[in-house]
Image 1: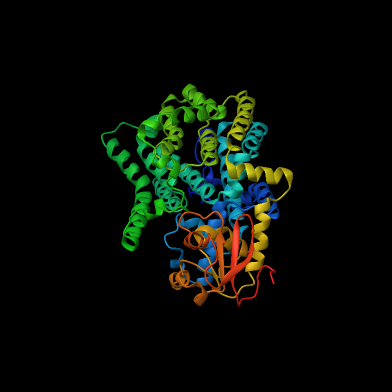
Image 2: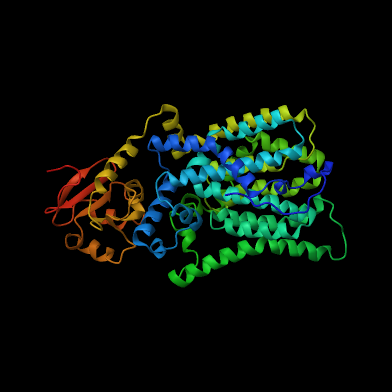
Length: 503
C-alpha cells in the first residue's frame, strides 16, 4: 500500500520544516516507485521461501478461504473470516505465494516511510542507511515481511496513520486528522490490535498536545476532545459494525474473536487465573530490557523532549498489556512493534555523534531479538529452511498430496477446511473438495458413500475438524485406504479410481 501525500501550497524550504511530515514532497507515483524499490529485499526472501515450499499457517488459511470464495463465486461461503482485509486482497489472485508478495510490498512501504522519516533526525545519510539495514536484515523483520501478511499490513497502516496523526496533534492539520482516523479504521480489518492502537492514540492526544506546547486557550479542552473523537471514531465504527454483523448472523457478537483462524484470543493465556498472570510481567520486562535501541530512544526523548516520554511509554506497553489480558500477540509481531516505535520516536535534529551509537544499539537489538524469536516453532522452521536450503518433509508431502488430489472431480473429496486448509491451499483450487461451507456437507458427512468418492482425514485432527474426528479411527463403510502419510490419510470409495497410485 502506498501512503497518500498531503496537498499543501508550495513554500520555500525552512530549517524547521524537517520536523514536519514530508509526504507532501512526492507524488503518489514517487511514493509507489520507492515502495517497490524498498520491497525488493523482502520479495527476494519471500520467493526463496516459496521455492523451498515453505508456507506459513497464516498464509495457508488466507489462501484457502480465497480459493473457496473464488471457486464458489460467493463471498459469504467464507463465513465471518477475520481479519477480512488480507483475504480480500489475496482474492485477486489466490495462490500460495500471493500473501508473501503482498506482505513484502507492505513491508517495503514501511521501510520507505521509515527512511523518509529519518531525515528529520538530521543524521548523516551513512548512519541512517546503516540504521535501516540493522533493523531490516533480522529474522524478525524478514519473517514478518514475508510470512505474516495480516500483521505487517496492520503495521503498515498504523505507520501511515502515525504520520498523519502527528500532523494532526502537533500542527492542527484537520485533513491529516481525518486521514489518520480513516486509516486506523481500515486497519481494524487487517488486525484486531490496530483497533487497540487507535483507541490508545486517541487517549494519548492530550499528552502529545502538551508535548508540543499547544496553546492553553479557553477552548483547548474542546479542541483536544474533538481530536480524540476524530482519531477514534472510524475504528470504533468499524469494530461496532463488524460486531453487530456477527451478532445478527451468528447470535454471538464476538464470533470473530473466538474463531481459531482469527488468532485474537490466545487459548493458552485466556483461561489463566489473574493471579498467575502476574508472573508474566517478569517475562515482558525481560523482553523490553532486550530492546537496547528502544530504551536508547526513550532516553533521548527524556533528554530532549521530556513530555514525550509518558505517551511513548504508553505505546511501548501496549503489546505487554494485550498479552496480559489473554489476547494473542505473537513474539515477532511484538518485536517488530518495538522496533517501529523506536525509529518513529527518534527526536529531531540529533547530534551527529548519536548516529554510530544508534547503529550499535540497533545491531544489539537485532541479536537479542533473534535469540528470542528463534524459539518460536514456525519461525525457527522458516529460518532453518532458508539457511539450509532444504524443504521440510511435511511441505514436500503436502505438495505431493495436493498434486494428487488436484486430479479429482469437483466436490468429490469430503474434507473439513478447519484441518485441511494447508492441503487445499497447496492444491490451488477448492473445486475438488466438499467443505462445511457447502450445503451438501452435512449429508455427505452422515453418508459419505452416497455423496463423495474420497475422504481426506488429518492424523492430527484440528479443533472443530468434523471429518477427521469422525473418520480418524478408520474408513467409512464402502471406503478403503488409498494412501497415508505421517499427517494425512486418504480414503477412496471401492468403485473410485485411486488418486495416489494404489491399484
